[in-house]
Length: 265
Ligand SMILES: NC(=O)CCC(=O)C(=O)O
Image 1 (cartoon, rainbow, N blue to C red):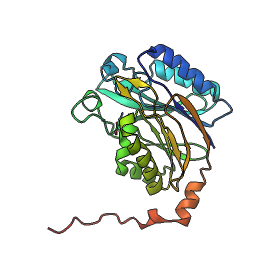
Image 2: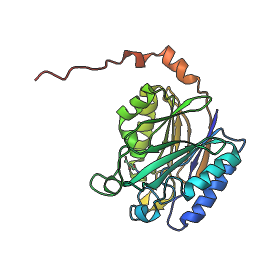
Image 3: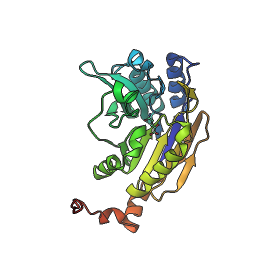
């Protein structure tokens, strides 16, 4: 199976409309080169451009949905289109990821569960998702999570319990914490014996330089491919069957001790 991670440069020098057109054309260019294409988190606004979240929020089936559904079907690829600031007509904003089939149908929408910013930014401007999401592809089952979710191993364990074998994580991760990004992507792969496809952004927006360094890790923790800092298409071939063989040959997941009692005081 081949996947292309599109590490998009997100900066204020380019309008959202123009970036959307450019990204759609990059997705189309993956026709024949990839089975699955992955985009980063909030690549329209920028994950740290909090001031634009409300003004640039879209309904689920808004302009990014339209452009990405068409790009997926033109290219004939599965498309994890990264996330949008979603305006729910009956509720708050959400950081929502969209996954399209090769015929351009929306097959999953995931509202980010862990919002970043502590007492500001996304954490106060957006609502928290409440549901884990997996997507069955012919070759593998995707488990989807977004950026800051990477720090919460229990979410990924929940995805694995629901059948996930390939963990897909769009992000807008800052350069300041790049070491965490690489370390945590490898940790999530090793502990869950799963592939991790983590796609970040390049460039600087809202004064926050982005880490880039999108990464693909196999179930043994080996880095199969890693991008540099700038805009880049990172294409990798991987064998989804390696999840089953790794889990058979080194069956650590079977040794989980669930329901341990709390420590005695
Ligand atoms: N957009 C995000 O979720 C940023 C996460 C981050 O910067 C971190 O976990 O560190």
